[in-house]
Amino acid sequence: MLDENNAQCPVARALEVLGDRWALMILRDAFDGLRRFSEFHKNLGLAKNILASRLKSLVESGLLTLQPASDGSAYKEYVLTEKGRSVFPVVVGLRQWGERFLFEAGEARSDLVERVTGQALETLQVRSHDGRVLAAEDCQRKVVQHP
Image (cartoon, rainbow, N blue to C red; front, side, top):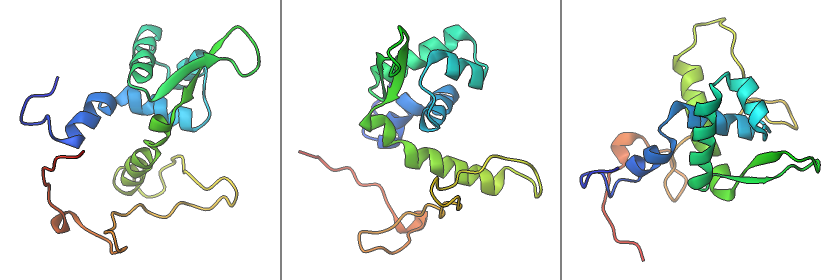
């Protein structure tokens, strides 16, 4: 639950939903095309009760929806919603930061590449409304009332 100092902060609210490591790892796997409980379990190696809890939370938060299996079997599948798909740039940003700062030269890692060309992605950047690249010192928080 957010305290009153953080109630107006979008970062704090986002962390209420996404701040758990496993939530982001599940979403990462969903972006990679995983849909079934067993696929997430096998790929993450997470205890079933914890996985079930995190998947339930992601469904309740509207990032995933539970649907009948696309192959017509009795299974259910977890499918990204529009809200869930919109987290993709956040995951890419975390990945790019990790690639830059958390691996030694020559150390093996997975790369995220464009499916059609196989080329690496351009580094994400924060831009102004007119396209200029902005740094943290170029921005400030401002509380506004939205309609």
